[in-house]
Image (cartoon, rainbow, N blue to C red; front, side, top):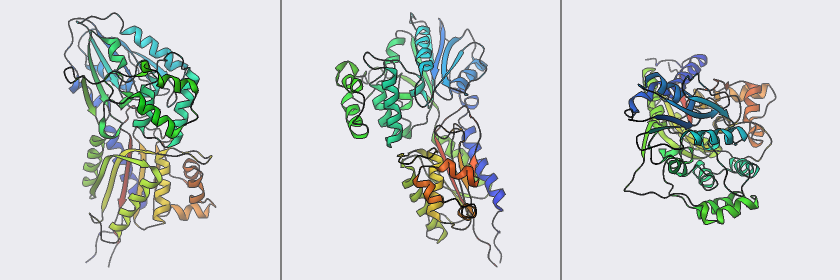
Length: 430
């Protein structure tokens, strides 16, 4: 009796892309915002926000809000949306620039002098940490930029990076909420952080902060002991401490889309295409190469008949890996993951995989991620391109640009972090 033959590679890649598209669609503001909106207030409604999805979230609010509306949101360059009542300002990500500082100052003006009758609707998504920025005494923009760049290259987790950011900011770590009082504050958030922690997402500007300046100092000592003296001096100052949680006054914080939602949507599409999903989790962290190695081990177990599922199947995972930059190449964490996976699998048959950021931008490059098939290393050798050498040089982007496989979508206008899918087909048998 014959089993179904393997699906042709070009069709498998199309399935992978459908899984990614389903994950993104599950987090689009147009599909998620309206169900979570509060009732209009007696007074004014002011919309503020920051993140890669902030403009599309604002557009979704405008589409359904019944009543007067004004405000300002900050998003990454190229991630704007045609809002009519809410101003959209674009600034730099992942390192703050002068446009971000100016936009944050204007945003703070919008929430000044409000009353108890007014409502502030804060729209947050991944990327908000860099985009919503207000300086503190003694720390310059250049200091903040130097720390951000060093931490992003160090392999620090997003929670560690944001702990430092919160204690060097006049708006992060709950300080924005203090500026908004006594108005009612409701936060709508699209999570891109492992565990969906409100205090980590966009560095928690509207929620109290459980981390401390002492923790921030330890993170600084671990990853960038050569940090600017002004930064260290600020963290040593008790004034850098952030507002702490008060169980008697919990914030009104509403998650409208999460990485788990995206993975679940992709799993449903996989089942519809005849692939049994194996979900490893939506909050995986760790070095991209190490995480790729763990995934490769599971793939080999499945191919050997010893895995938790049998082909045809798909391994799904999300979260946020890190890259410790030691080489001089180009490439974000998703491209690095997928290249490391290809090296670890070494041409294992009937395996295709895709890794991409749901915001459409892998780090600071113009691709969302990359896709591979079992023949990727063969193609590379024919072109004289060494996968292992490119990986050691942190040049995953360069590898896929030369060999093929870059996934380029442009900004998706949402962000629920990384998406990874590994399709394993079964070989044909007579």
